[in-house]
Amino acid sequence: MTLLYAIVCAADPARDVGRLVTLAQETGWTVQVVATPSALAFIDETELEHQTGRPVRSRHRHPSEPRPPRADAIIVAPATFNTINKFANGISDTYALGLLAEAPGLGIPVVMLPYVNAALASRRPFKDSLTRLREEGIHIHTPDADLDPYPWSLPLDILNGRPGR
Ligand SMILES: Cc1cc2nc3c(=O)[nH]c(=O)nc-3n(C[C@H](O)[C@H](O)[C@H](O)COP(=O)(O)O)c2cc1C
Image 1 (cartoon, rainbow, N blue to C red):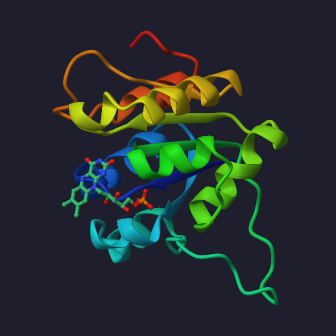
Image 2 (tube, rainbow, N blue to C red):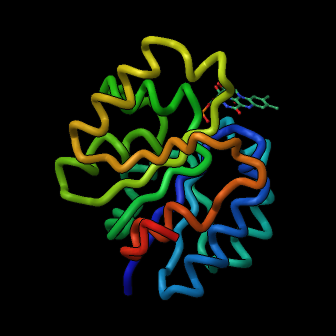
């Protein structure tokens, strides 16, 4: 089993994260959806659980619960300004950020597809975050064109070794 953690943050494309699940399953991945707490308002948890056969995870497990399996790869899409900046600065105050905090140290590949408007993208802290994350080996796709429709296949193509498609 190759296990993909699909981390979804609180921005509009989150409502369509089922498309990422479908595309990933079509290329052989088992998918675990992880939502930030704020992203729960954007997604259809029941539908995603039906699709993946796994509960959507948004909080740390209870200490008495078993440790979940380790991801083979992580996609963060849509990745918000908030989560990107926190990840870059080592902040780990959501379950999603806890997974991301450890990923580089564990050698787990991470592909991020930011979804931020031009005002946020122009901020110095955001640019610094992208630079620092890239220095740590995080693959961040920042398209020059606009993100409508949101390119769900892109992060998967990168993970599946087809970055040009
Ligand atoms: C309707 C709506 C749309 C939003 N769109 C975006 C967005 O496109 N990009 C972004 O970075 N934040 C967006 N936000 C703000 C984030 O949801 C907010 O910063 C939140 O704290 C992010 O939490 P998270 O990073 O833990 O998911 C939006 C918020 C709302 C309510």
